[in-house]
Length: 532
Image (cartoon, rainbow, N blue to C red):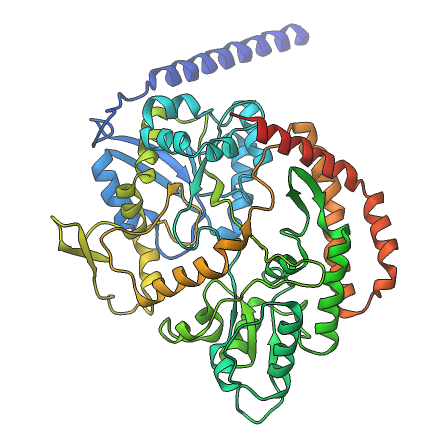
């Protein structure tokens, strides 16, 4: 009797469960996509609501940002924003994927949070929708970008032929910067009467010695730090070029892929950096300090050469004073007589994805497509009229900046409360703001980049996607390999590990399956090269 009762209860439960599932399916089917206007605004005639997850910078609540408020009015599309802090975003995004309760749109995640492997994996699972057909039908600006720049389309098309996330494509003076450049302390150069910047590693070494011994900060103390950085992460890309390398890891040279940390040229780089460290020309705290500590030394006028996006971020100057801080010029060395710098592709992936929960994919792709036009990018970057800018001559297209409201130290701080296009890799085709006069600092940056980076910059390795099995192997190999080369670089430069142990170091790396790593990236490069 008890057994029969148990069977009856289970049957009733299953019937109720099936009924609930049927009701849920019917409710989903009732959520028909809103009809989309293919041109102009509004995008939909009747208001729709969706959800969006993005990293928050903490400058303002997204619902309060004038740019998003105005765009909601223009489009008839409103969002419920989930914007966890940038430090927590990756964890929150992973939890959302794991639960299946993920927002309709993933915005400004960037490839460090929404990795290429995640795009491939969640695309294959159907969690991320393929975007290429939506783009062809509803996104003329993105389609135009792909047609005019096929490398962009190749770089966001996965190995299964689908596009699961849109890029941020950057144009303008700083778009080719691989990292923030290196800068010279212009006051020190003036105090020492330096008229011409070093062009070779030997000339650079001699100037650093002068920085060390000739009291360029004029305080009568031997407290100068000729060259500084944090773990070499920003300086390394620029100095590797002097020894004929574009990247610390995988790079492509004339169609062939190689791993630079085991090349003879890298050994020469280590010798040179060890000499700088040994003679205290390189900051003795380079592998221990934080970025804040580096900046504190700069603001105390103790550093001569340093990396940063702009020099005044480290030296604590105004942009006007920074006009006297020249950008680092590429060096040559006894092992490489051609100046060389790494060049950014100008493409950041993982900036916009549509999930399977989204009831309005067509409206969503139309919503983001606007930001790939000149007008749309300027709106995203500068916000609507009346906050950062106003018309000086609307008919002629001339704009002028508005004064900062009280309580803001910089224009960028204020801009971060106006728009989400601040400190994030937002989906857009960026470029100079039209109708706005360039500042002297902007002209300076453009001229320095044109002279010192542009002629010598080469992309180290294109943006590719790996097959699932390739990604699994690469993840396994790099987990230990990246840790090892980072530890060994610090040891070789500081002298803890003598360079007489170079062969042992190379053998260790070869034993960590580095040849497989190179082969996988060679295959991926060959696929990328052959793609339409």
